[in-house]
Length: 336
Image 1 (cartoon, rainbow, N blue to C red):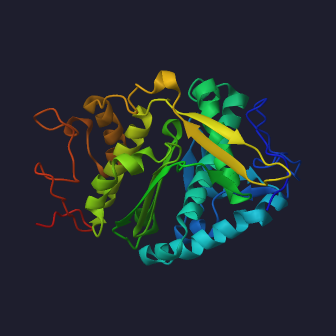
Image 2 (image 1 turned 90 degrees about the vertical axis):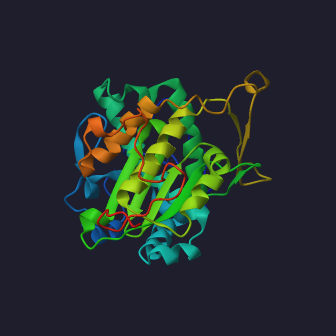
Image 3 (image 1 turned 30 degrees about the vertical axis):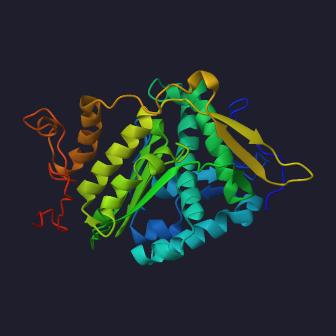
């Protein structure tokens, strides 16, 4: 367990590679730059030559994405988290029965924050308009809380009567070719992420205070026992990420830092009196959602003019007009 003071990289926007991104302690910029994506993930899905595109348009290979992490932070829980999550995710969908939800959630936050660390570093270095929004006060406030959440991987963090995010786990079709069996999407401006590993599909709104899990629990129960095609999985993630974007900033966070009596960080959330009448979500606009859906379906060959049906509504591969779940085999042939 880490016992150093809680570090806030957003105070002074300190995003360098000679300081641990979790604890702020000085590190060896050679020995303590750690590969963000663990070997088990890179080797299983042949990601050695694959790249991630940053908001600036530059690309970086998976093995080259390294983040500054002290040995103390790795020993305090990050190494164990990576091993435990890897062992169980590689075991397939049934392995999730043994995986603690909090551990999986921290793993997703870790991947997301590692990418964001790179993005913010690039934003400060290049001053590119494409990613300038990352250093706005609104996003800094959100990322600051997410950084506190990530501390839960290396020290005690408690949440007072709320869950920090909404996470959904679904079964998906598996494929022999690694490039078809793996997919990662990072919703940088929605604080969302989805990860598909063979028959395991995971998506999360990382900092919505459990709102989507609470509001849409009955909707996701429709998919219990179903095996989704990647197109269906991506459509579902389009809905999650758009809903995350529609969420109003009605919540205020409180942070109680560790002291001599209590070594834990305590996070609380409340809705201020002047925001209690505000809706949690802004109104859904199908035209806006359609642009998100089109971006996610484009790799499957769907042109923009096919995203909306004759009535002007966005297409769906999840349900029939009567609300019945649609089922597809691994080759995307509908099962009647």
